[in-house]
Amino acid sequence: MTYNYNNKDFDVIVLKKNQKNTYIRVKEDLKIYVTTSKLTPNFMIDNLIKNNRVSINKMIDKMLIKNENSQKNYYLGKEINVVIINIVKEPYIENDTLYVKNEKDIEKFYKKEREKIYKEKIDYWYDNFSMKIPYPKLTIRKMTTRWGVNNKRDKKVTLNSELIYHDISWLDYVIVHELSHFIHFNHSKDFWNLVEENYPNYKKIRKEMRS
Image (cartoon, rainbow, N blue to C red; front, side, top):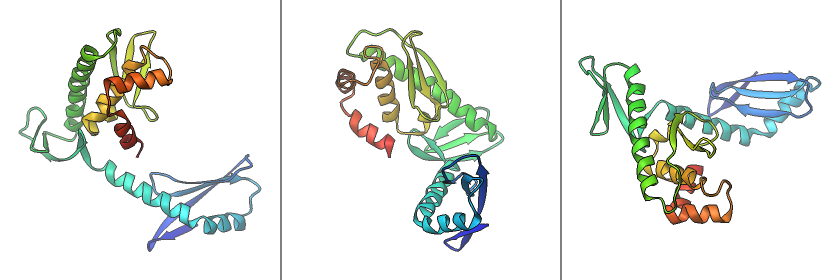
């Protein structure tokens, strides 16, 4: 089964399982996945797809944009070019262009920058925080649902490795947010007041991150 949108055919994958509800999703492979009950007849699936064309088209558009952006390279909120030159010994960036010896060195560059910039920012906000807090241990890892995590017991802050691709203000806000949890381990009014005390522009940044 295929689905046509903007003169292009997209494969429809029907997955019948032991469940009552039916779900339609478009994944990164740009295939449309319909998960439904084993008892759902094919004509009902066809009608469901026809009746949800607007939603399916939006999901396809969103995934196309996501896939396009994933093929680009960003550094602190700016799109950068990558030039591979085999005479380059260590990756370096100049005039929004990253020079590397090979493709593996692209991630080598980002890893080094994360360790340096995240540490510098942790130190800066720790030194300038409005209340006394423990100096946090820093962990960096990729997370799919959070930009940062505070482990109050271990005095540790974990930051999302993806922050290196976004404007530096995102990193600033996330660090202030997680440091504030050392005082208020919740999202109460007092917590947000403390965040605003240290980073008055936080609402604008949160809005950007959500969009």
